[in-house]
Image (cartoon, rainbow, N blue to C red; front, side, top):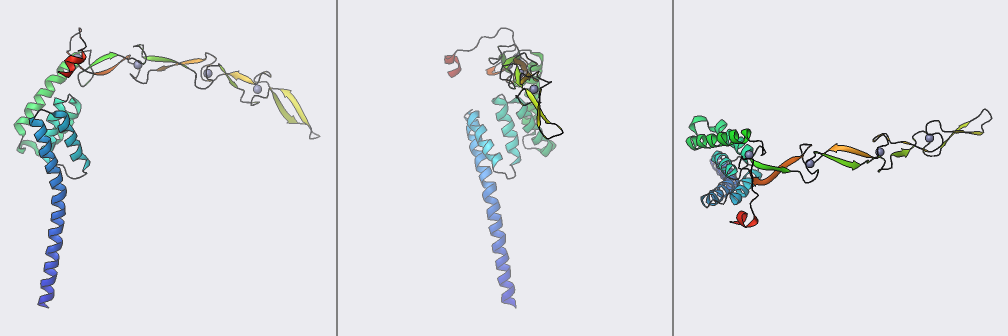
Length: 237
Ligand SMILES: [Zn+2]
Ligand SMILES: [Zn+2]
Ligand SMILES: [Zn+2]
Ligand SMILES: [Zn+2]
């Protein structure tokens, strides 16, 4: 009896240790990635750090709380201001005033607030502070004049009643076919396009800029009317 108990205790311990071992592996993976991310942050390589944080998120495991703050910090450096705010809010929601990085989080919050005010006051950039440039798809008009997709630019479509035959066929009392000119198309077999009403083209909101005529670029806005697009060499340096 005693030996049975001992055996089951040992068995249970084995199970528990293998479970905690498994839990440590996934937690350990997130921790190791976080350390790698911090390493890149120390080298101010925030693009590489961003990739590491995304790997942590894709583990589908509980994310170490501090990773939320560090990711928010990285996102701010990469000018992903709205995402930065989201992660920062998650961090402060979870940790409240007891967070290890409470003061740092507050400083980041202040920086985001300052940037948000500058962006809001500026009419030349998008919500992340990137310069809005004239949409290349619509040349700034906000709409696109396209060939009608229904009639392919002909202005006419096949008559819906006679299906293009121009005649309607019915049977008389003796069962014979009786032919009558289609009253919808007057025998032409075509009717005016129902989408463009014969105009042959349709005007739609530009899908790229959603009708605004301007879309965000990858150039940071200086929040001034005058904006010089940096040359390639300047971007590289
Ligand atoms: Zn017809
Ligand atoms: Zn049409
Ligand atoms: Zn456009
Ligand atoms: Zn701006």
